[in-house]
Image 1 (cartoon, rainbow, N blue to C red):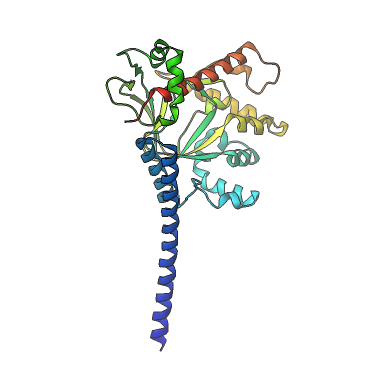
Image 2: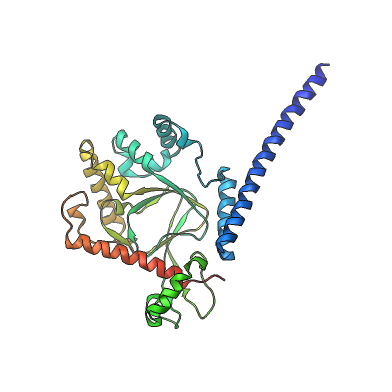
Length: 322
């Protein structure tokens, strides 16, 4: 009798396990079916559809998430528990950054709570050359490559993509922009009569636990190079807006000066060699914490920001799907 009860208990647990797996699998397949229907309705090109599907497959495989969030339960916690969880899972990132490691615990806690998480597939571009930089990146998983490349235009070697667009005239550009929803910006074109990227030179490899872009928190700058994911990559991102909103508090003035000094010192020591990931757009000694009316330099920064957005839109309109 005892043996029969034990067997019944075991079979009961197995049945519950199978039922849970079946329910989870059914939810995943339902999500993917819905995804396919939406992409079909949007008439997305096949290469872009494959990348979207691969993204959801990776999110499901790595985090068992169906909505793109990689920490599903954390937002549901109260602020105290949420802070403890984030500080625990991001301890290695914090210890790798000198200006976080040596700051007051309150500042570290607030900055950690502001970090935004993002995942990228292999080959995704995280930072584009020429863009206005406003974010710092922490690599939680995988590794990235800092690269440099030029683009051959439609008309042949050495012709820039912007030059080719100008020669086609504004009417042609408008028509190209109207068809932007049918274009995949993630799939490089390989045919000879379209814009092609030259072989990219890898300047540096950024591994898991490392970080980059911290100069963008304390100085106006633009990217000199591309940064792309060489593997599946999980990032934590600190924006300048969040950084300034925290460090502008009067109680954190000492931490602000300490951070700014360390970041600028590292930039002077590390980023002014044979290559530099960023170019400063104005004297960082003036600081970006100062308030006042907009200067000519600030207006120029706004123009550069608009130009970087237009450049990305133009890049999107120039690349067609395979």
